[in-house]
Length: 260
Ligand code: NAP
Image (cartoon, rainbow, N blue to C red; front, side, top):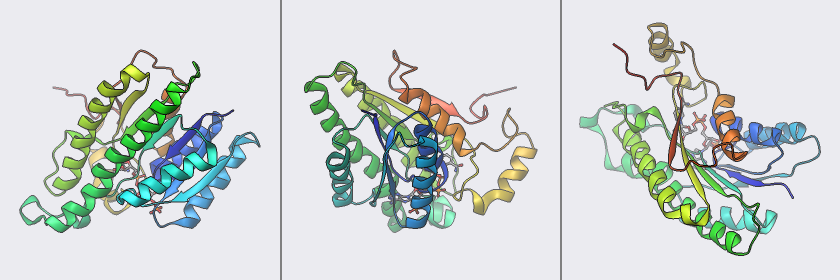
């Protein structure tokens, strides 16, 4: 039986990159998306090709910011595959309007927090409860994991998207909390912290980041690509970090290094 991964926001960008890398190593997949059904179908088709007839992938639309959708997504996974080995909390949105801190609105804040922070928190809770159930049902080979995609914005302050930064800082703590709570059940929890990655999300600010990268923003002096996040998730999925939990994996071209 293949391990099963549920990836939120897998229709495009980083989530798609993660789905593709997990397909390559023989995971069955639940590809979640919010509104872009065609893109989800493209991810599914590409994963099935890479899986070469050995994997199953299914698509499930759900808004991770909505409690009923989160429950439906988890129930879909249970009904369709009967197991969950890996939850990847990847879905996320950029700050609406990139407003200065002094102009930020509560409406935008609540919208972003529901998707970027509350969604992953309670989806992790649902996954963890089910994983504990599966663990108790036996199976020594069952090594469930939860991975959350955060950002360098978990610690780098951008005053024109405070809501986004706060959501990612919250996810960093969420990873520690779930890691500490779930270790006794053999459920390991990781944070992946991407730097500047070429996706639709960064499309509108491409010129800005092109200039920053040209100016030496990162020691590895280029944009990151979605498959590079996917490969980090693949390493975790393959249990290559068996004595680690609560770990932060920076996939950022060295952005986090301080140099003088
Ligand atoms: P993206 O290209 O905009 O793709 C976002 C994905 O999330 C899409 O699959 C989208 O689905 C899905 N999504 C959006 N809102 C959702 C919701 N409410 N419920 C379920 N799915 C939803 O973004 P990305 O750059 O790949 O970002 C993915 C994650 O990486 C985010 O958490 C982001 O904060 C983080 N990140 C990105 C960068 C970067 O430089 N790109 C850097 C650090 C961290 P639809 O296709 O249906 O809209």
